[in-house]
Length: 228
Image 1: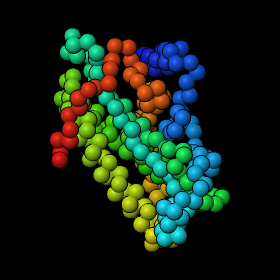
Image 2: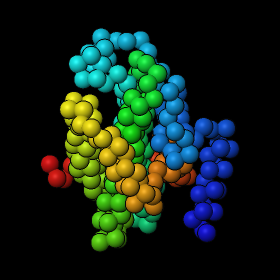
Image 3: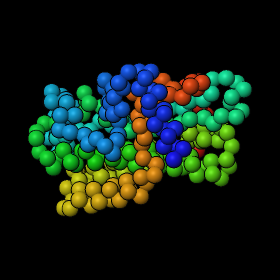
Image 4: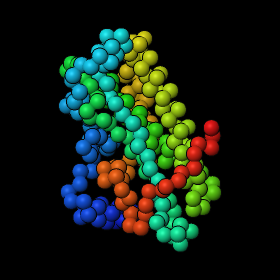
């Protein structure tokens, strides 16, 4: 109950500070939420650029969801607080509205691209899970920050492999029943990892583009990929 009360207080504080802040999107991106489903109109690029025409004609990708995994780490501003307050790390899948394209109104092609956004959400959850696992093994201030970029880089490699395999099966080879298979897999993974879903706080960190906890600032230096 304390966690829920803290989250509610945080949301109220942010709303008061920034006005009626949209908790799903900013001017360029929509951030993943279980309460919002990407719509037809969110794929707002219908200009038929040369690149997108090539994707459609050569690879049968006539809808394109341009997505990314946003991440940032905030740390206490005061030196004395760095010894007693933990770093805060945020992840949020982002769907770029202006570059996500569609050439038709085919509902299946819409569903085939919408699933990609969910893949990025699974990646965000995996990052949180891995960092929690490291912290639980060695519960100390700063440990998450040390492995932040290493875990993110490792997860992004696996995410790229997932998207590649999905694209090969569904679009390039057009394996019968492949989309349905992937949809079941992604839904199962989302259900298994719901404890680590992207939260309102995660989204608002990127929507406001500034720390959402008093006394914190964006980390100026972040440890690079230790696995590289």
